[in-house]
Image (cartoon, rainbow, N blue to C red):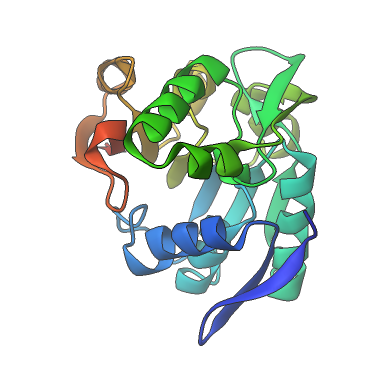
Length: 249
């Protein structure tokens, strides 16, 4: 699909390949404030994992103009849109990395959905469960159209602590770690060294509980000293068991 400029509100436009998905994500971030669950300083350091086309990073730059953000997105077509959107909105203090995050450095298969790029994933087993639920509860041909054209591509993976140590060694506090990675939340968290865990003040994660992911993430965060709360994600049908987890020190 062609990358094109779409107006999502009277004051906001962005480049995207999937207008309907971009509108959904825009409403989730800018209207419903799903990831806006903690109060930050005026100059926060933010890590955006699963940056997609950049809407979360743009929202945080709008709210915190002095924020410094590092953003991770492995899908090449999403990376192109991400960088185009940052340039279009004249944002220069977001550093982008075309990587997935995990527990170790490697190259691995990533399933990319051209019609729904925000659903692209390293965890195809969990995504297949979501797709099956979608087809069982909605018109099957509509589901086929949304997820048609899936392709596997190889993407680079590395640990978050690698990037922090290699490129951001002067960062003493990570004010917010946002994670939206379609089923590999535990792997992202597993790539953080103890020294870097001590820097993290707040975390917001989208988690599917179709296979018990909620309890797994909650337990891990509690063992790291966070107070954890969660709510059902708005705008997503209850059958998908999608939650927004917030962890604060």
